[in-house]
Amino acid sequence: GNSVTQMEGPVTLSEEAFLTINCTYTATGYPSLFWYVQYPGEGLQLLLKATKADDKGSNKGFEATYRKETTSFHLEKGSVQVSDSAVYFCALRGNAGNMLTFGGGTRLMVKP
Amino acid sequence: DSGVTQTPKHLITATGQRVTLRCSPRSGDLSVYWYQQSLDQGLQFLIQYYNGEERAKGNILERFSAQQFPDLHSELNLSSLELGDSALYFCASSVGMGGRAETQYFGPGTRLLVL
Image 1 (cartoon, one colour):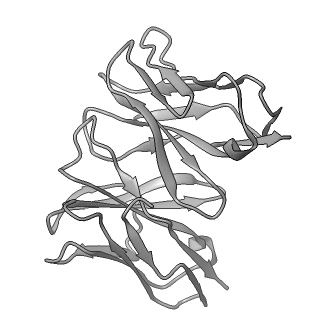
Image 2: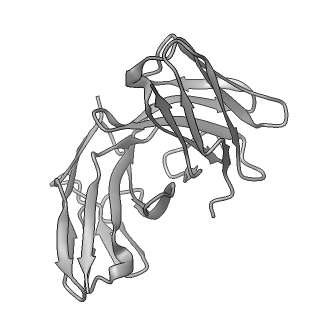
């Protein structure tokens, strides 16, 4: 079946540091890939998505590139802010079935 | 604000009881999805409804059931509750049946605590 593996957190960074959160997946065919963010006490918000190989999703300074050869979709941001502190979830939707399969989530803590 | 609403926000109940969680999708969305977020299992898909019909089923227990009404709101019924059912239950909606690129918009969740 489909699965998503994320680096375990928490990830603690200073403000303006570079962020990478690793995400790899296992799926048959050509899944769509997503990053969702969950701020404290809130639901999940879509951060970005990519639907085919080599697509780059981007939003609010975050980027992720769909790499089929390495089955990865790593999240990056050049300069994090305290307001980026949240839990980040990598997810995929495969060819069969409409549900999202999520990774375990990575907590990011950004210190001033 | 995603436009998806869930009630109640918090629910505390006892083992063996039954509860109903309610979800209203975004205006115009026909699909509703239910997910469970727990510490040990992470975020797991439970069930999807599209325009009133069950569309896809995931790891949903037999003690759990759901339905989508003609006005498109959905209810998740959890019965014979156990301590392990304590979790955050999310509802999400999307405009269509759930194609590969279709975005699911999540509600704020209902936090269930079973004592």
